[in-house]
Image 1 (cartoon, helix red, strand yellow):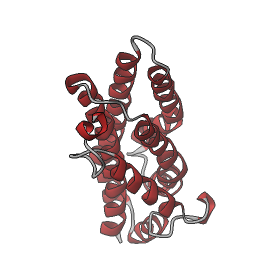
Image 2 (cartoon, one colour; image 1 turned 180 degrees about the horizontal axis):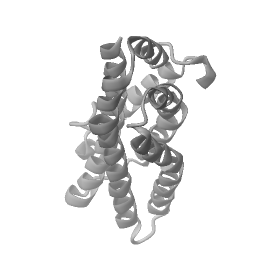
Image 3 (cartoon, helix red, strand yellow; image 1 turned 45 degrees about the vertical axis):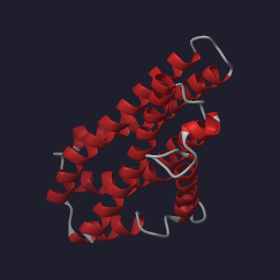
Length: 199
């Protein structure tokens, strides 16, 4: 079950990394190639980065992974405290990104620069958070958690989600992620290219 649990956690991290890569890629296309901004796609990406971590990924980490690791060892206390602090601040960081996108969409002269800077900052925060979990927290979890712990964690992160987070939340976010992929241009998705959009 350890491998199953870790595979799901890493997969969820990859989904979030794909979206923030997409944000930065699209911003570069606008800056470097004069691509037409797709605000619908940007809003979908930001919604995903708000709702998926807040409603699904982070609650499961807090309730199942972090809590059980705290029970097994004090060695992880400092990194867990830092990760929990970052989880709490996540909503504020998303609001800042939403405000920057709204400013850009409103047609302000420096709107793109403000949004691109906010997207870069948000992306750096997410990358650093995931790196801290994967390089520090998960090795400690592998060292200290029991086989029984990993069964519970794998089930909580499993296919059907957790009933406390709503009816089949995983399916909602899989659908949203698919929508983002279908809207995004190559190479990050299968939607129309920026050239097609401009034509």
